[in-house]
Figure: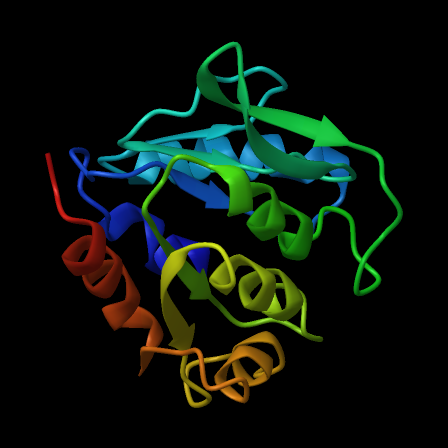
Length: 177
């Protein structure tokens, strides 16, 4: 699914992109490298201490929870080894909740195909502190309609779209530089 979204984001996207993909540690680096080769926007496996910049996609390393926080006056990536959540590590819930204290005025959340409900609690909590715009993948284009269905059932979703329309919706919401 990521291969049908990330390569269609522009290099000058006016926002950073944080991705939590439920994968074991060894595979996330090669996934990030492959997406980077296919994309105009820069894609990397996020590293502890990375300064978060617009026009860059940060893919969470497998096996650890990726968070974003203001460190030394700048938004940076950091990792924790907190317990699994929704049975996964990394968990999107932790990443979304880490953005609650961020300086970003609006956060665009895209929930793609996957089992379970990871991301739903995090987005619900994030919505208490930030203006959010939520995009969910539709059932017909989802391999597993678990995570998109879970967030859609909350009533927080702004758009439910087929996979091939999600990159355009993200770009329209956050704009370009």
